[in-house]
Image (tube, rainbow, N blue to C red):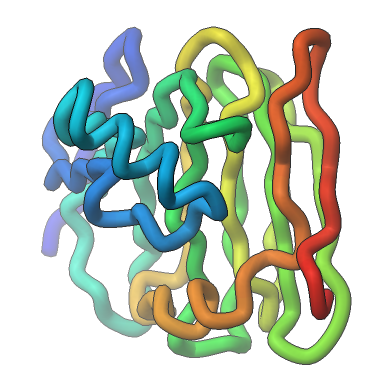
Length: 185
């Protein structure tokens, strides 16, 4: 592979990139209120929750993968739009986030142990240490856009993250949000 330069467009897209779109029907299991999920799917159709623009880098040792993610504002029931969340398949790898636009939270969770909630958004740098699952939540009224970079051979483990959850739910209030601890966390 040769070096490359990618363009970061005003709404958070990277060109060139591979685009991954996550619709509500694909991530319905991360939300507590399945009645709200069903109502949205029935009345609005399959809502786009977020998009990931993946840089075209080999998933191989020595390379650094990167992307931008755009999480659209909105709620499912009283929970904000959020990413599916994942561990790295290679648990000993970290990830770095740079907030470009919007306001959100970074939820972190170890397989055995505590969770952590970090305020995140435009102008903030987030560090996800090795062995921590991570999920991002848009708590604002505009898209939450961030850049991320990680070892390209880290892989993704969505199954364990979905099974364990993140230990906390982020509920929308009229004037902000409230964290609600999940049972068994």
